[in-house]
Image (cartoon, rainbow, N blue to C red; front, side):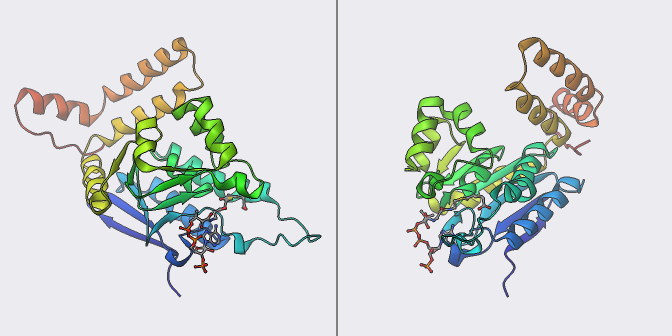
Length: 262
Ligand code: T3D
């Protein structure tokens, strides 16, 4: 049996690959449990300074594996709330809250929860041939895994509503034009480009990146006053970091900084 989640480490970068290519990396319960364990481990491991998530084969992730659901007429309906509470929502929360950057390389179609898990990343690259599909509408569901949170904040309510109700595919370049993702890149350049940026982040002032991520995540729910207070507190802590000392010293000595992430 092939591992449904592949994990590899190099120089502070943890790569996590969704690996059920014959099903476009759709999640079975077991695969999603393994993915959650990989995310939790990456979040807790101080030697991991950046995480890169991608998919094997021609798809990124087609969301929930619908073969893993018993939806026969008259049969007992699956408890999708339980599925979200125990598996999808923890994955989104771990990606959003882990104190290190999460880079997503969307190598192909991203549908349903697969699309929204991608959007949970901090920097989302997509191959130009990739598509994002809020396919929930096609099967009578609502956008989950943070879709109703990320979509209106990134693309505005009119486009969010259109994507959610119609379930139409949106290409990577349009996704980038709309501000849904960071960049669309040529297919053959995707892993090199996303990997290079992820390695650059892993060698950067990652404790500071964690605080930046915390501040930006909080801004959606904060007043300006609350956000200014948060910036003050986080900057105060950043000012005591080794990376700040190193960054300023390197600038004054006209040399490249060597950040340790503390
Ligand atoms: O249920 C819960 O726990 C609650 C949480 C729900 C979250 C969700 O994600 S709900 C949404 C589930 N996902 C979908 O509805 C997407 C279903 N897939 C598609 O619409 C299409 O496959 C795509 C648009 C993603 C790609 O289309 P295309 O034409 O490029 O590929 P394909 O031929 O449809 O798929 C290739 C194979 O993957 C195919 O199998 P086959 O015919 O070669 O044996 C197809 O059945 C399989 N596949 C694709 N997506 C899924 C899947 N098998 C099971 N589940 C899937 N989600």
